[in-house]
Amino acid sequence: MLNSAKPPPGVITAEPEPITLDWPATALVIIDMQRDFMEPGGFGETLGNDVSQLARAVQPIGAVLKAARETGMLVVHTREGHLPDLSDAPPAKVERGAPSLRIGDPGPMGRILIRGEAGHDIIPELYPLDSEIVIDKPGKGAFYATELADVLEKYGIENLLVCGVTTEVCVNTTVREANDRGYRCVVISDGCASYFPEFHEMGLKMIKAQGGIFGWVADSAAVLEAMKTSTTQG
Ligand code: C5J
Image (cartoon, rainbow, N blue to C red; front, side, top):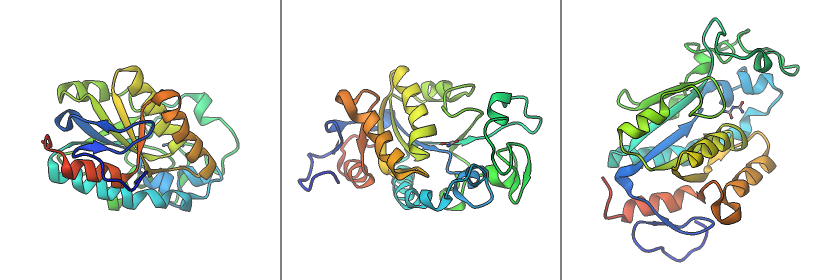
């Protein structure tokens, strides 16, 4: 936690300031914890990244996911990826850079970043339950060209606990999209990770700077403590 003093019941010790959430109106959103980003041979590695950098987020996400499941919180998992015919993949994305394999090419976990392939799926440690929502997204943000806004509205969600990978790409993009749509976003700092530790740090700073211009940042221990002590838990 950010400081050692116990917060009042239900209050998340966060930056830039503590926040109290209406828990029945809160969803846990887990961004792109897919084999394509987390494991060797996937999209992340084709871009030249050291995928071992992301492993640190798995345990904190698992702890919050367990607590969310116990309290009946709405859980949303997202997956970045494209249709097999690449009709939803802009050429500007597919043709970019000089990766070792491009989106759609065959790799050790199936075609890179393609829906239905092994690499596109979520890692076993955080695998969604049948009752949980999985949003397939073609972009970095989870709202772009998806049904996420409709799902959140249907469940009366006003607040998002956001975690996943990578901090500065899909987590940041989704938080910015959500902030513009009026959601309070609490980003779980140790439940996010980047291939570049300095981008992780800056990605979190960008969210909480200027009085929380995009949202709040708290660690998993602070979120778990607030969930445990809250009296409004669903
Ligand atoms: C990236 C993501 N980094 N999930 N996707 O391309 O952050």
